[in-house]
Image 1 (tube, rainbow, N blue to C red):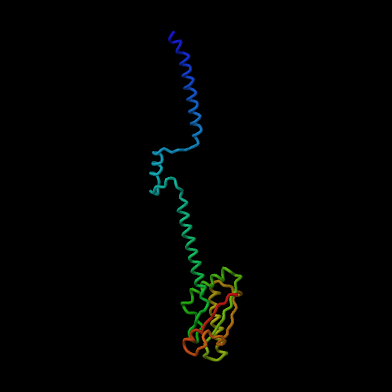
Image 2 (image 1 turned 180 degrees about the horizontal axis):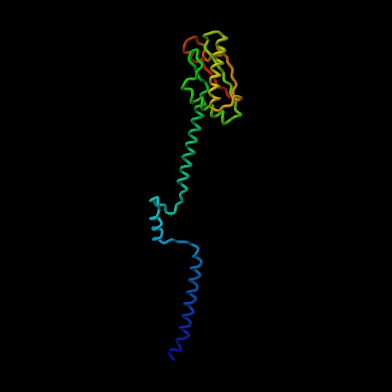
Length: 194
């Protein structure tokens, strides 16, 4: 009889275990969506990595972002450099010459690049001379100087329709003194943006 009296208790215990088992299965189902890798699996994934660096699951995008940032910084630096070169608008010439000096070419190239990429922009090239020589000769020399710069700009991509040339000869000196220092300042072409 003792065994018969244990049947209801055993049945009750088995029912409790079954219910507890079902409850823990429900809890397991709720957490099934969360993927928790085991430490060994994470280590194995890192060991198989080609980079040799510990990434801890970080994407490779920051490296691309760094490259893009470097490219953007280089582009901004180049734009600032070009803008600084365009600040130079007066170009000087040797006595009785209309050839462009070597030191002026980088700045003129910056003006050419800007004008080529901004076709609506227009400029006036003003040719000037020192007071030596006749008025007629100096007007022609100032025009040759301005045309020399115009030709440089056109060769570097600027449309002829963006450029107007005028010569003032000796009529508008930058320095009114009558010495070599003043004359050096007066032999010039000035770029005026319209």
